[in-house]
Length: 304
Ligand code: ASP
Image 1 (cartoon, rainbow, N blue to C red):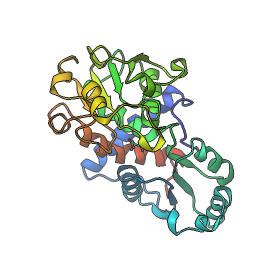
Image 2 (cartoon, rainbow, N blue to C red; image 1 turned 45 degrees about the vertical axis):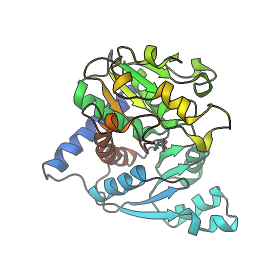
Image 3 (tube, protein in one colour; image 1 turned 90 degrees about the vertical axis):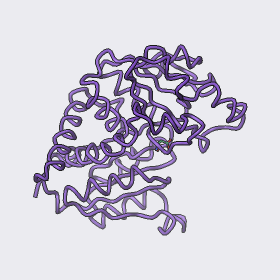
Image 4 (cartoon, helix red, strand yellow; image 1 turned 135 degrees about the vertical axis):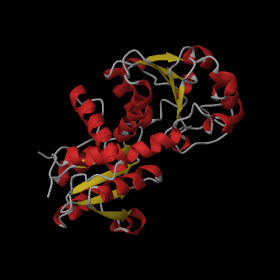
């Protein structure tokens, strides 16, 4: 059975844990040099309408490990610059017999539209400020490798929560699997209707990270932010930066995470980003394995 991977919010818990288990299994196999399933008859289209380093390359790497062929679709070189609509672009790729699509788009909901017209699996690689499901899976796998269970963990998501799709996917996933989610940031960057997202809101950093077992730092999403939402970068950093000084309010052994790209010196300082509590590189690495699991799951475990 073919499936789409669009949002964590609508995924049943057993599918989330199944994907995490599968990712861990693929990681163990790749690390041991063992065979993983071959999906060599599958061609996947990578459609990135917004910039990406980590997500795009890790989807490519995941496709490579599974023996798939990936076809990169450079939006600046496509017929969309001649006025072709997203729908017609998707229909073209469908009739060129691309089997699945990985899509990043600035509009929330674009992968859902693509799924309607494509007729094969569509994987959301980040849509506007809606969701980034594979990032949340990579983050959960990274936490689980160090804390064993998410149940009862205090996880503080700090920064520009309102404009962050990473915050949304993480809040849903962590809440579903039993963590206590806290959303921390200036009022202007917290969701205007907090009841729409699981978690408690805090606008004081010290209170929001007190007793935290995990802190997920977020970049200010300036590309999605109206002017004037923060007074200045300097003031924001002085109030919300994760550094040695602020980290002492968290629990000993607190993990510091960041989905990247990092703006060093703003949401996190250099020492913490490169320090022992940080698991940022591990999040990147696990991104490859959760995306392998996502491909395998979306194509119904099909092997050839
Ligand atoms: N890379 C993540 C995303 O695409 C986080 C970020 O850009 O700040 O949402």
